[in-house]
Picture 1 (cartoon, rainbow, N blue to C red):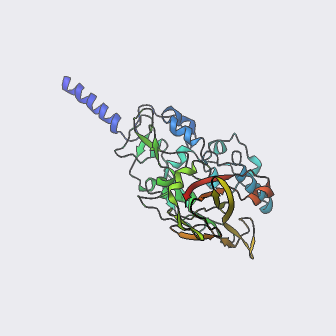
Picture 2: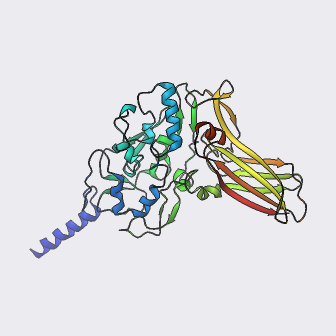
Picture 3: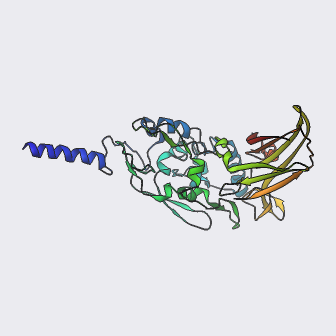
Length: 364
């Protein structure tokens, strides 16, 4: 009898550790997806990062740039539905513009934890890809190996797309407008060594969960133009290759162009100094302008790339400036960007500011 009791206890313990979807304290999930605030009970650090991220702030109620562009599109196309919902609020069911409400689940949750961690595969399409969602609630994909167990939900760590960055390609691969023109595209050069996740979700200090001690966790603020751009600065190299005239080499080590969105504007600023005093300053801008008939247009009207001077993936570009520094002089080089091109920001009444991405100083 004692052996049977011990065996029963052993089986129970084994089941609780390795039981798949059976969990000790399963979450009460109402609707199709768990609410993000339910993740706080274990993942407080990650939740704090996520609340600052473009994923949490993806809706028209939290992103003024997206709000303005959507309003312009809706007015021009006389749209009846929130056509951006597929990626900006993927759990939204009622997409009618007339019924928009920031308190609705889809808008409140934006791009939620539960949604991304249930992406099973990516369905490829010419116009835009589609996320295939795991139908089981309370079952999530992760990347920890050996597999970290949770008492609240099941974790599957064997899906490769959550390690090689393919999971991001449902929304971040490409977008084709009604004219068949690709408005924005990310080159899909994902590998296990370098991909969307390794670059934009690098490992940072802190526990994955307050129930499991880990030295690091994946950054859930999603580093980019809005959050922690300094995390990505290591992928841009600035070298002084000639002094007279001054020549600078820019190397883009990222697997995609810098930058991608047609609203962005990057700028290289070179300051010629002597004894701390500015003698001369020159700059060079980088843009990707889309439009029609050689003129800039909104994304939904565009049929061509009018101008593209952005740094391409893996590109090494040498730029020359009319500067002739002498011994003892200092050259300060600043590479930065505007999230919204200042001209567009002024036209549409949007906020924008110059963000320093990388700065270097050379003493001649």
